Length: 324
Ligand SMILES: Cc1cc2nc3c(=O)[nH]c(=O)nc-3n(C[C@H](O)[C@H](O)[C@H](O)COP(=O)(O)OP(=O)(O)OC[C@H]3O[C@@H](n4cnc5c(N)ncnc54)[C@H](O)[C@@H]3O)c2cc1C
Image 1: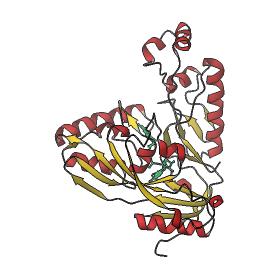
Image 2 (image 1 turned 90 degrees about the horizontal axis):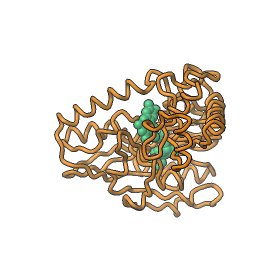
Image 3 (image 1 turned 180 degrees about the vertical axis):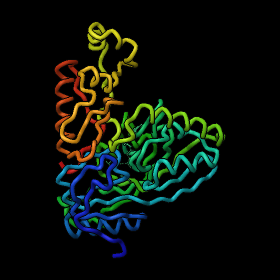
Image 4 (image 1 turned 45 degrees about the vertical axis):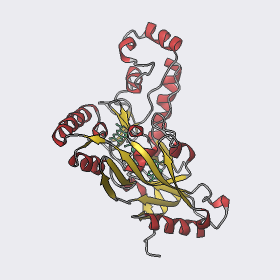
């Protein structure tokens, strides 16, 4: 086997939260052949598999992951007119940098979002009114749906590559078929951008990055927004507005910013162990130094419980739990 598989690797090093226990097995796959090779290793050893991108949307348990973590690092990038063919392991930052350099526009809003192209597609990341869905033309996948230990060997024979078009990706708010079904590894994607102007794109990006630094607690390890922004129906919203008139301005399209809800609880700066609700943005939980996953979990459940009883709203996590 050409690819190196390591044992007992601490995952906190690979997450933006700097939280997470040990992976029983860990490897970095730099191309599609290596991805297939490690899947065969998982098959032989009857291991569950977790596909890791940049680790920027994850809460990994203190117990870690009892299986094989494959860190995807295939980083090809080709540009043909206004199309970009990009490996899923390339960082979103590098992708945006290259698109701008080549006078292509369409990704500027996403500047400053950490992680890989694969993770960005899985989570249908978005900011400032745009999301991945707007640029993805086609996604190349490896179907590993039959490749879990309970499916029995041989996996390798069951591995199928395929392509999904934009509609088949079933993009939703911070989600997609990849997030919901967990049976595909994204290998690459074709993105469709528009002709732009490098200087103009750079100017726009600078503005977005400035807004991020002002609003997000980037000085601490975190995993971005912890919860999705909830959508409530008209009568629920009307009831809430009666009690909190400022919501009339804040709620757009029946969507209430979670940060506002949490701040309203008086939870700004609330700490459990090393985990703290950011003072800068209440939908961020930050690791103040030595937070355990357990601290974050307790804080999350406290927030959910209080929001439910105070506002009648059930919050849903945007971050993903691994190894729980
Ligand atoms: C400071 C900060 C700011 C953020 N701002 C935003 C924001 O503005 N908007 C927003 O939407 N998000 C934001 N996020 C969240 C996060 O950056 C995104 O969700 C990101 O796309 C995750 O990508 P990743 O590569 O880190 O994926 P990971 O966190 O490693 O994984 C996320 C999911 O994708 C899966 N995955 C990763 N790669 C592949 C692949 N090749 N094939 C199949 N599955 C794969 C993983 O298994 C997992 O299910 C922010 C996070 C931070 C820390």
